[in-house]
Amino acid sequence: MKLGIALSGGGIRGIAHAGVLKALEESGIKIEAIGGTSSGALIAGLYALGYSPEDIYFLFKKYAKKIVGTTSNSVFSQISQVFKKENAGFRKGEDIEELFNVLAREKGIKTISQIKKIPISIPAVDIKDGKEYIFTNHIPKEKNAYKKYIGDISIGKALRATSSFPAVFCPCDFKEHKFLDGGALNNVPVLEVKKQGMEKVLAVNFKADDITEDSNYMDIAMRTIDLMGNKIAEENLKQSDYILTIGTDKTGLLDIKKLDSCYQYGYETTRKEINKIKEIIKEN
Image 1 (spheres, rainbow, N blue to C red):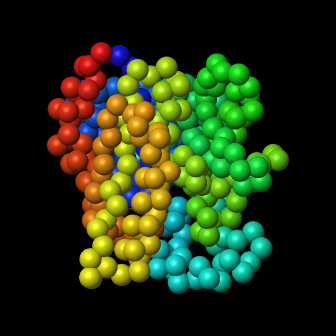
Image 2 (tube, rainbow, N blue to C red):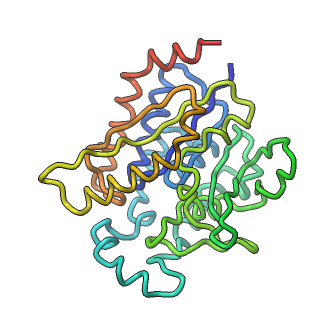
């Protein structure tokens, strides 16, 4: 039985996915294909390159400031100014592209097509034609697949493209495309993972935090992002065999101070659900 996993976007909370992968490995559950959107793609990319969940965790801790480059408070306080600018966005994302290209070269890999460990699927959206494209090392056999699937892109460029969150990053240019965050159309790429020949797919997303009288504008913004992301992912989630939802206790989009706790949230939630996941895997 082939099991794949699809990791949702969610800003800095994405490190929780590394905790999920660690718990699965410890339980002897093998992942044979992986997909991810935005921050989920950063984890998926490193895992497919051959980095262990622990490696990924320490890399995020080491390079968090370089990846984020700003704080969630500064993002929302300046957002009105951003939309007045052409090619709106605070950062071009070149730091992310360079960092992940270096990490890929450490494994002897340049383009996504060169990844051999497991199939990987990473969505991004071209704002020029409004269509979704998939960066992958294994193009599914379907009609006109070459129009949708891209393999000749560097690891860094692919991860930069899928995580180019609007108003935080500028669009990512690649050939004739202008890519933005894949979460705009596909926040949990279950179907793309299934297309890689997987019999079962585990989806991992984030719980939208409740709003109370004590909630601030960042809490409200994060809940809005989560609700939108989960709504966009609805059809994909229906195609999954199990949904693992991680609560992260009001962690902001770029709140690097909560890296440790998010990693633990992912690990502990998976450990609690591990018997249910094993039962799903055993089902025919």
